[in-house]
Image (cartoon, rainbow, N blue to C red; front, side, top):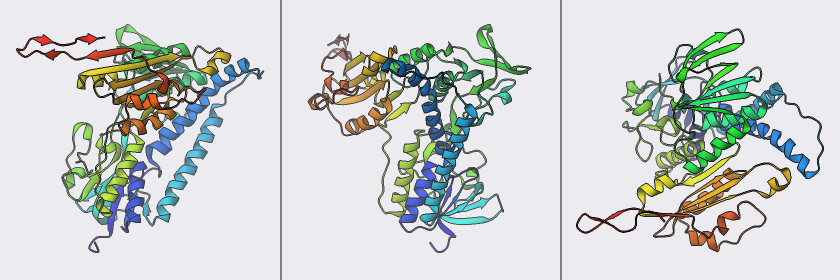
Length: 473
């Protein structure tokens, strides 16, 4: 490896890139990493971490109201947006510093510069024009928000990148999109006191999640005061003396202080020089990779959102670790992208792992559903009209649990632990044999014994005639 300046050059110091760099260095590789913004990437700087901090802030409104039912008398609370933004900034700066420190402790050289690929073994640092040769190059540049639809005045809109640092809390906010980012910020800002409207192209929010969860979050947003309009998109954004005037389809219009577009994220590959090295890209500019994260060029790999496999921080971290073990640790590993626990930090919250009911019914011949809706113990004294929904999707022929979906408080925490059981192939009988922990909401997962629905696929008869059980039982 002496023929190269470094053994590994990592472009992008986000979650996947940092993990890959540190692990590769622990295997004895000489590693350099370049980051043009701040070490830590989207998750730490303008994604998961600051968002979760704002979720906590938004939920205090409910906590203050609930306290009265438990005997607390509180003064009328008030909210200070600049104070929250400052506290958030202090925390993410601390975390970014930890990421940087850990890289340095591992012996990784950090370059505060944009880096572009010159060829299969060369990277150029834009800060000073220096070229660095590397035996291997890892692309871990993540994804960027998409400003769509492309309409007049689109430049006036903000994305999830900018919303964390607004100078003041908007009184009126329009959010465009129905995915998890749109839904989470709608939930956050309505609880902070903003008048929130959400418009989306589809007929419901959170496409790809279990339908019962989608409906539950939708109803929760409505109860919180979010104005939902489906099948509606903006057609023009105009600056006005009081903010922005937004023209919408169906002859609708809105006057707001901010417009946030949250219609997705595309792999961050523009201007990286991939074409110079001949790196193949697919839909939305995603870097094409094999099971070991290698591109069509043997010396170039890619991990995380830039590959558009599964856009989740823990996935990027796992892919980065597996890459380093594969290339520098002589321990080849292909990351499995199934049964990944995930959450939507709306209020109510979603925690989910495994197949949805719709997905399971499309694959398996017999599906059993176990579902419960109940009022949590806390709500009995708070008086809140709050429900928790739990749903277990089971293969009716083998009894294996295919998916578990939870809506309500602490759903994400439960989903992380359920991920272990689903990953191990636990059966419904295993759930039933587990002793309940009382009083908790999670105990319902092991006490649901009565099947609420069964779906069986039509089975063709021996001469092409349909026979066997049909539909829902």
